[in-house]
Image: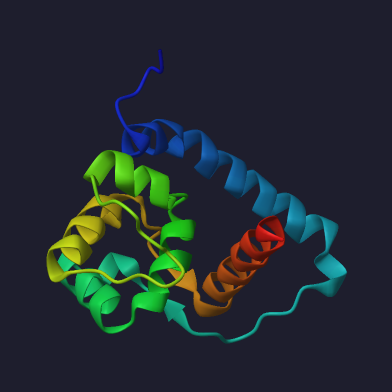
Length: 137
């Protein structure tokens, strides 16, 4: 039997080790590619500055942002179904009620990074969309 109750518990349990790995990786990437690194200005979403209602409203008004945000939290539709009992969630083309959007926003808020660059969210979405499409063929 698993030593956690739900996906959220597991993510929280692994978070510290994953953060340490990320910081170590960032140091190694900076050293490995120091001659090829440039600093650029880019747009960043600060999740730390929003509340659950802000996030839920974004999911209602712009449903297509759900998948990359879930991906940034390492949460898939099956975790939403199991932990929140929201069934048949298509994360690529979601149709959420206000209640569902609020439940998902409340569930994932604690797992969101403080901030993330928009190009990173787009890259995550592109990767998982291509993976999904390749598997379906």
